[in-house]
Image (cartoon, rainbow, N blue to C red; front, top):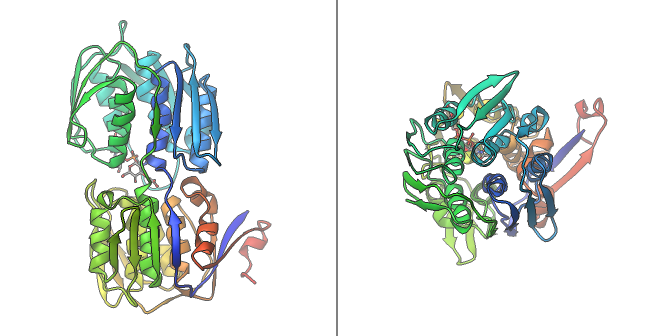
Length: 431
Ligand code: EPU
């Protein structure tokens, strides 16, 4: 078992680099399935989820070369692609579901295990299913697998209005529509920068899509697409992680590669809390306050406050000079993190999808456990403000979305290490 051990008290100073976005690259890799030949992605992050998606593509018949040092991923897609995404991969990573649209469109069939992935709430697939059905697919569940079958002659264009701007459903339906016969109008779609990134790759592959960046996408299906080369958009959640880490520790960090236009709400909240945030042309410079002011935060689909940064807002609130309310509107189970934060001494009350936080000058060390990617990273960041030495368990979650959080934090002056311990030893206090 591995854990990250953090000795609190560091004020983060220096520079960190933001790689390409996890939540974009995984969908871009899935999109490569739409065209026979070699698609090349650049600025690919060296994270576990990319390795899982690479394995999924290999099992579908692709040859995948992921060069972590060069940050590239080359995917050779054969003429005949498989159609099954196994349970073990989908269980490890819910984003495996994003092969559903491309496989249904290109192969005419997909068998994708019903996902588990991280433990942040029951995340439905009804919008994915309704959209594919509207395009003529037969969709049913068989032995824990979601099975789609396109009609003879392939998917056909349709008008699909999403009842909620689901990121995953928008991506799957877009990837299905680019090879469907005729015009598809997708309305009420998600507007995250990662959707724009997917649209950009699909356009480079020869797709016909208009409405990029808006809440309605119009897609005119084409007979075939060609492979393309594409650089992944920088990861706004990783950038936000470092910005909040600077603010929480009262430090000064240049977040190189961060795109401030993708983080408007998250950076506004940091400024409200007393941080100075300056775009630098190559990223953002964040100077944290001595003690943050309390700020209410409510998560919403983009361009609202991102749910993926909610744990960091909560960690900031935990050391603020006053009380505030943090509201989670997207994933109900994300407050499992709040209870771990309580173990570090945070004063909070969870009530449904709200948390009332009474800030304290500092936190205190305790053993804590990550329940998902962002919770894990936020516990590491919160531990920087905790007196004593904190062991964060469940670091496998962190590796799914962050390249080498320990090296990055050490580069910023933090006292952090990663260690392998025997399972029984993991229960004992840190030396
Ligand atoms: N939902 C439905 N039915 C659907 C689709 C979604 O009810 O058919 C509900 C879900 O249950 C959930 C909400 O809608 O409550 C949001 O789901 P959405 O489809 O928008 O999110 P996602 O595609 O499952 C992606 C990111 C998440 C991020 C959310 C919201 C990836 C791989 N994951 O998930 O990222 O939190 O969008 O922005 O892109 C993370 O990176 O740690 C992470 C969890």
